Image (cartoon, rainbow, N blue to C red; front, side, top):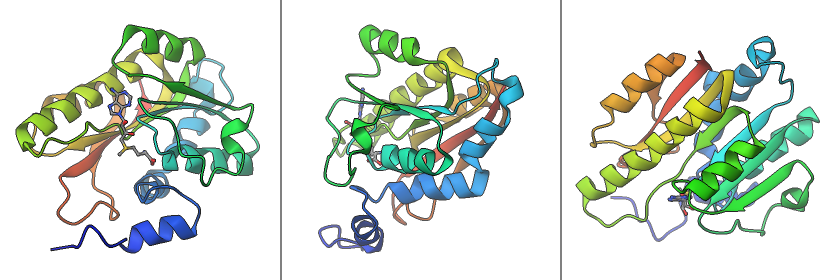
Length: 215
Ligand SMILES: C[S@@+](CC[C@H](N)C(=O)[O-])C[C@H]1O[C@@H](n2cnc3c(N)ncnc32)[C@H](O)[C@@H]1O
Protein backbone atom coordinates (compact mmCIF):
# COMPACT_ATOMS: atom_id res chain seq x y z
CA UNK A 1 0.00 0.00 0.00
CA UNK A 2 1.24 3.51 -0.79
CA UNK A 3 2.61 5.58 2.10
CA UNK A 4 0.37 8.68 1.89
CA UNK A 5 2.49 10.61 4.43
CA UNK A 6 5.54 10.69 2.12
CA UNK A 7 5.31 13.12 -0.78
CA UNK A 8 4.83 10.85 -3.78
CA UNK A 9 6.25 11.31 -7.27
CA UNK A 10 3.42 13.59 -8.43
CA UNK A 11 3.43 15.68 -5.26
CA UNK A 12 7.16 16.27 -5.51
CA UNK A 13 6.95 17.06 -9.21
CA UNK A 14 4.14 19.57 -8.50
CA UNK A 15 6.24 21.48 -5.96
CA UNK A 16 9.24 21.49 -8.30
CA UNK A 17 7.11 22.84 -11.15
CA UNK A 18 5.42 25.47 -8.96
CA UNK A 19 1.98 24.01 -8.29
CA UNK A 20 0.39 23.68 -4.83
CA UNK A 21 -1.21 20.28 -5.56
CA UNK A 22 -0.52 17.10 -7.54
CA UNK A 23 -4.00 17.33 -9.09
CA UNK A 24 -2.57 19.60 -11.79
CA UNK A 25 -1.25 16.51 -13.63
CA UNK A 26 -4.77 15.11 -13.94
CA UNK A 27 -5.93 18.26 -15.77
CA UNK A 28 -2.74 18.36 -17.84
CA UNK A 29 -3.29 14.77 -18.99
CA UNK A 30 -6.95 15.48 -19.79
CA UNK A 31 -5.97 18.61 -21.72
CA UNK A 32 -3.27 16.78 -23.69
CA UNK A 33 -5.41 13.71 -24.43
CA UNK A 34 -8.62 15.51 -25.39
CA UNK A 35 -7.17 18.84 -26.51
CA UNK A 36 -9.58 20.06 -23.89
CA UNK A 37 -9.11 23.84 -24.02
CA UNK A 38 -8.32 23.88 -27.71
CA UNK A 39 -11.53 21.96 -28.36
CA UNK A 40 -13.48 24.54 -26.37
CA UNK A 41 -11.68 27.40 -28.06
CA UNK A 42 -11.49 26.21 -31.64
CA UNK A 43 -15.26 26.05 -32.06
CA UNK A 44 -15.52 29.82 -31.90
CA UNK A 45 -18.06 29.93 -34.68
CA UNK A 46 -20.45 28.07 -32.40
CA UNK A 47 -19.57 30.04 -29.26
CA UNK A 48 -22.32 32.57 -29.85
CA UNK A 49 -19.78 35.02 -31.19
CA UNK A 50 -17.63 34.68 -28.08
CA UNK A 51 -14.02 34.61 -29.23
CA UNK A 52 -12.07 34.60 -25.98
CA UNK A 53 -11.41 31.52 -23.89
CA UNK A 54 -13.48 32.08 -20.74
CA UNK A 55 -12.99 29.32 -18.17
CA UNK A 56 -14.86 28.50 -14.93
CA UNK A 57 -12.98 26.46 -12.29
CA UNK A 58 -15.30 24.95 -9.63
CA UNK A 59 -13.70 23.71 -6.37
CA UNK A 60 -10.47 25.46 -7.26
CA UNK A 61 -8.45 25.55 -3.99
CA UNK A 62 -5.55 25.33 -3.39
CA UNK A 63 -5.29 26.45 -7.02
CA UNK A 64 -3.26 24.08 -9.21
CA UNK A 65 -5.88 23.82 -11.95
CA UNK A 66 -6.37 27.59 -11.87
CA UNK A 67 -2.62 28.14 -12.19
CA UNK A 68 -2.40 25.64 -15.06
CA UNK A 69 -5.15 27.54 -16.92
CA UNK A 70 -3.69 30.99 -16.20
CA UNK A 71 -0.21 29.88 -17.33
CA UNK A 72 -1.74 28.51 -20.52
CA UNK A 73 -3.58 31.79 -21.06
CA UNK A 74 -0.36 33.74 -20.47
CA UNK A 75 1.27 31.77 -23.32
CA UNK A 76 -1.80 32.19 -25.56
CA UNK A 77 -2.01 35.87 -24.58
CA UNK A 78 -5.77 35.58 -24.22
CA UNK A 79 -8.47 34.20 -21.98
CA UNK A 80 -10.09 34.84 -18.62
CA UNK A 81 -10.69 32.61 -15.61
CA UNK A 82 -13.29 32.62 -12.85
CA UNK A 83 -12.46 30.31 -9.92
CA UNK A 84 -14.70 29.33 -7.02
CA UNK A 85 -14.06 27.55 -3.74
CA UNK A 86 -15.21 27.48 -0.13
CA UNK A 87 -11.56 28.10 0.83
CA UNK A 88 -9.08 30.73 -0.36
CA UNK A 89 -6.42 29.84 -2.93
CA UNK A 90 -2.80 29.29 -1.92
CA UNK A 91 -0.58 32.24 -2.84
CA UNK A 92 2.63 30.21 -2.55
CA UNK A 93 3.27 29.63 -6.26
CA UNK A 94 1.16 32.04 -8.31
CA UNK A 95 3.81 34.76 -8.83
CA UNK A 96 1.11 37.42 -9.11
CA UNK A 97 -1.09 35.51 -11.60
CA UNK A 98 -3.99 35.59 -9.13
CA UNK A 99 -3.75 39.40 -9.10
CA UNK A 100 -4.13 39.61 -12.89
CA UNK A 101 -6.96 41.46 -14.59
CA UNK A 102 -8.10 38.25 -16.35
CA UNK A 103 -8.73 36.43 -13.06
CA UNK A 104 -11.67 36.60 -10.66
CA UNK A 105 -11.98 34.52 -7.49
CA UNK A 106 -15.26 33.84 -5.71
CA UNK A 107 -14.98 32.46 -2.19
CA UNK A 108 -18.30 30.69 -1.82
CA UNK A 109 -20.38 27.53 -2.06
CA UNK A 110 -21.15 26.49 -5.65
CA UNK A 111 -24.53 25.09 -4.52
CA UNK A 112 -25.93 28.40 -3.26
CA UNK A 113 -28.11 30.86 -5.17
CA UNK A 114 -25.81 33.80 -4.39
CA UNK A 115 -22.73 32.06 -5.86
CA UNK A 116 -24.75 30.87 -8.84
CA UNK A 117 -25.77 34.44 -9.57
CA UNK A 118 -22.18 35.77 -9.41
CA UNK A 119 -20.93 32.92 -11.59
CA UNK A 120 -23.58 33.40 -14.24
CA UNK A 121 -23.00 37.18 -14.32
CA UNK A 122 -19.35 36.46 -15.27
CA UNK A 123 -20.32 33.97 -18.01
CA UNK A 124 -20.96 32.51 -20.47
CA UNK A 125 -17.98 30.17 -20.36
CA UNK A 126 -16.22 28.24 -23.09
CA UNK A 127 -14.96 25.59 -20.65
CA UNK A 128 -15.97 24.48 -17.15
CA UNK A 129 -13.55 22.45 -15.04
CA UNK A 130 -14.71 20.96 -11.74
CA UNK A 131 -12.44 19.13 -9.34
CA UNK A 132 -14.83 19.91 -6.46
CA UNK A 133 -14.85 17.19 -3.83
CA UNK A 134 -16.52 16.93 -0.44
CA UNK A 135 -14.54 16.63 2.80
CA UNK A 136 -14.48 12.83 3.07
CA UNK A 137 -16.12 11.02 6.00
CA UNK A 138 -14.61 7.58 5.34
CA UNK A 139 -18.09 6.23 4.62
CA UNK A 140 -17.82 5.52 0.91
CA UNK A 141 -21.58 5.61 0.25
CA UNK A 142 -21.93 9.03 1.89
CA UNK A 143 -18.78 10.40 0.20
CA UNK A 144 -19.83 9.13 -3.25
CA UNK A 145 -23.33 10.65 -2.85
CA UNK A 146 -21.88 14.04 -1.82
CA UNK A 147 -19.37 13.96 -4.66
CA UNK A 148 -22.14 13.14 -7.14
CA UNK A 149 -24.24 16.09 -5.85
CA UNK A 150 -21.29 18.43 -6.58
CA UNK A 151 -20.77 16.87 -10.03
CA UNK A 152 -24.47 17.32 -10.82
CA UNK A 153 -24.14 20.95 -9.78
CA UNK A 154 -21.23 21.31 -12.24
CA UNK A 155 -23.44 19.79 -14.95
CA UNK A 156 -26.13 22.37 -14.05
CA UNK A 157 -23.57 25.12 -14.64
CA UNK A 158 -22.69 23.48 -17.96
CA UNK A 159 -26.34 23.42 -18.91
CA UNK A 160 -26.95 27.06 -17.97
CA UNK A 161 -23.65 28.93 -18.35
CA UNK A 162 -21.59 27.03 -20.95
CA UNK A 163 -21.60 28.25 -24.54
CA UNK A 164 -22.42 25.98 -27.47
CA UNK A 165 -19.25 24.08 -28.44
CA UNK A 166 -17.91 24.33 -24.87
CA UNK A 167 -16.28 21.60 -22.76
CA UNK A 168 -16.79 20.24 -19.24
CA UNK A 169 -14.56 18.10 -17.04
CA UNK A 170 -15.98 16.95 -13.73
CA UNK A 171 -14.63 14.81 -10.90
CA UNK A 172 -16.61 11.73 -9.83
CA UNK A 173 -16.11 9.29 -6.94
CA UNK A 174 -16.66 5.87 -8.48
CA UNK A 175 -19.17 3.54 -6.87
CA UNK A 176 -21.99 6.04 -6.53
CA UNK A 177 -24.90 6.23 -8.90
CA UNK A 178 -23.05 8.25 -11.53
CA UNK A 179 -24.43 6.43 -14.61
CA UNK A 180 -27.37 8.87 -14.83
CA UNK A 181 -24.96 11.83 -14.86
CA UNK A 182 -22.94 10.36 -17.74
CA UNK A 183 -26.19 9.74 -19.60
CA UNK A 184 -27.21 13.37 -18.99
CA UNK A 185 -23.82 14.54 -20.27
CA UNK A 186 -24.31 12.45 -23.42
CA UNK A 187 -27.42 14.46 -24.17
CA UNK A 188 -25.70 17.77 -23.34
CA UNK A 189 -22.49 17.13 -25.34
CA UNK A 190 -21.56 15.66 -28.70
CA UNK A 191 -19.06 13.42 -26.86
CA UNK A 192 -19.13 12.39 -23.20
CA UNK A 193 -16.93 9.76 -21.56
CA UNK A 194 -15.30 8.62 -18.36
CA UNK A 195 -11.51 8.96 -18.06
CA UNK A 196 -9.12 8.13 -15.21
CA UNK A 197 -5.79 9.99 -15.51
CA UNK A 198 -2.52 8.28 -14.56
CA UNK A 199 -1.98 10.79 -11.77
CA UNK A 200 -5.03 9.47 -9.87
CA UNK A 201 -3.54 7.13 -7.27
CA UNK A 202 -3.83 3.48 -8.33
CA UNK A 203 -6.31 2.68 -5.59
CA UNK A 204 -8.14 6.03 -5.74
CA UNK A 205 -11.89 5.94 -6.25
CA UNK A 206 -11.89 9.11 -8.30
CA UNK A 207 -12.36 9.43 -12.02
CA UNK A 208 -13.46 12.21 -14.38
CA UNK A 209 -16.33 12.63 -16.81
CA UNK A 210 -15.41 14.66 -19.89
CA UNK A 211 -17.94 16.37 -22.12
CA UNK A 212 -16.79 17.88 -25.43
CA UNK A 213 -18.78 20.05 -27.81
CA UNK A 214 -21.83 21.31 -25.96
CA UNK A 215 -24.86 20.97 -28.21
C1 LIG B 1 -9.52 18.24 -4.67
S1 LIG B 1 -9.76 19.90 -4.17
C2 LIG B 1 -9.50 20.78 -5.68
C3 LIG B 1 -8.05 20.88 -6.08
C4 LIG B 1 -7.82 21.89 -7.18
N1 LIG B 1 -8.39 21.43 -8.46
C5 LIG B 1 -6.34 22.17 -7.41
O1 LIG B 1 -5.82 21.73 -8.45
O2 LIG B 1 -5.71 22.83 -6.59
C6 LIG B 1 -11.50 19.98 -3.99
C7 LIG B 1 -12.02 21.35 -3.58
O3 LIG B 1 -13.46 21.37 -3.68
C8 LIG B 1 -13.92 22.36 -2.79
N2 LIG B 1 -15.36 22.27 -2.56
C9 LIG B 1 -16.04 21.23 -2.03
N3 LIG B 1 -17.36 21.53 -1.94
C10 LIG B 1 -17.50 22.78 -2.44
C11 LIG B 1 -18.63 23.64 -2.63
N4 LIG B 1 -19.87 23.25 -2.28
N5 LIG B 1 -18.43 24.86 -3.17
C12 LIG B 1 -17.17 25.27 -3.51
N6 LIG B 1 -16.07 24.49 -3.38
C13 LIG B 1 -16.24 23.26 -2.84
C14 LIG B 1 -13.08 22.10 -1.53
O4 LIG B 1 -13.08 23.24 -0.69
C15 LIG B 1 -11.72 21.76 -2.13
O5 LIG B 1 -10.86 22.88 -2.12
